[in-house]
Length: 321
Ligand code: DP6
Image 1 (spheres, rainbow, N blue to C red):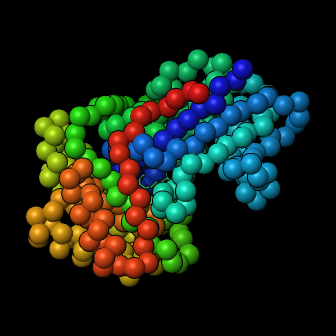
Image 2: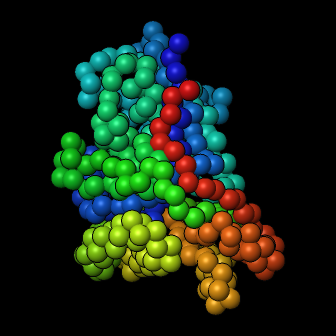
């Protein structure tokens, strides 16, 4: 029996934003994330006697416009390992769109692990991280649980994630605040490319990330929650400054995004632990403690009527079930 691979999504506290090699998805900087326990993708790969791959997502057959990225990725894997098998991919996303997380991190991590399992490639977790990275950069980090650093590297073999602390005994929870009505999305792939090409601040971002990675790793080692929160929020805002300073300028922020950031500042003024991080979309992820999260959720829901809140905790790495 071929086992199903399960990968959890992750939230970057120090963001990956920009590639020095598009083909290999080699980033300009390291990044650092926390794997979450609530949102995951289950994927099974079955070898089929056909000359084309077929992909089912949530039990629906994907057509050629929707499966292109996955089909290309499967071809990359075949080229890497020199086999010619085609697959039926069955993938179930337990990353509800209502939770405001992109599924590419858990999706490509689970797919890489599923092929590893079906083809009995015997990959180490480092090799699996490299393979997942070729599908989507952030997927490289979903191989591990807890705090994870993706080391930028300089070629395919040297760009992979490493665990910092897979089972951190630290009092952190994440509240995802989903803004229900939002405008058309610029994908992270396109958004980061435009930022690299046109933001005059991009070189500063590279310098900033290298110092913030060092600082946040020290804060994680000391379990200094406040420092972790401060650095994460600052890093996220600096990433979004790259989109605003791109030419033409663009932003992932919606009016509600800014409103939530103001509410977070009010919460802090009341002495309640809350720090914001935001990915390539309008939703706000709030870094909380187990104690603060209920108060933060209550306050946000009181002030804003049309948002959905989802709570997540620290999650594990790749599993086979
Ligand atoms: C803002 O991993 O989705 O979430 O490598 O082009 O697939 P590709 O990009 P992707 O970018 C994630 C961007 C981010 C920050 C992060 O997760 O580090």
